[in-house]
Length: 158
Image (cartoon, rainbow, N blue to C red; front, side):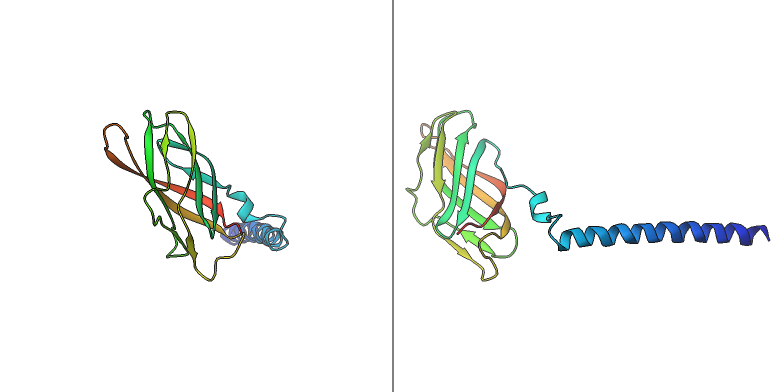
C-alpha cells in the first residue's frame, strides 16, 4: 500500500512540473512569434580579428568594408581583405585588385573594402550573416607576408 501512495505522489509531482515547463515553453514561443523576443537582437554585430581592432564593418553589394585600427605592434600594409559566409556560399566578397588598401601606422585607422560581393538569392537586406574575414598584410620594411583570419557577425545592408 505504501509504494502505491509514493508512486502516486511522484507521478503528481512530475505532472505538475511537466505542465509548468510546457506553459513556459509556450509563452517563450509566443514572445518570439509576436516579436517581443527577437533572437536576432540577442546576438550583436561583432568583428573579431586578432592583431587589429575592428572599429566598424559593413556588408553590402558594393563590398565588405572594414575599418581597422592597427594593434599589431608594427606599421603594416594591408594587401587584401576577403569575406565569406560560414554557411555554404551565402555571401562571397573577394578582392580583384591588389592595390585596394594602404599602410596603417601603429594605432592608426584605415578603411579597406573587399570589392564587390556575390549573394545567394535567399540573402536580402537585413539578413544576419556570420562569416569569416581574411586580411592579408605585410610588413612594409621587411616585406614579410602575413594572413589573419577572424569572424564577423553582421547584417546585409542595401
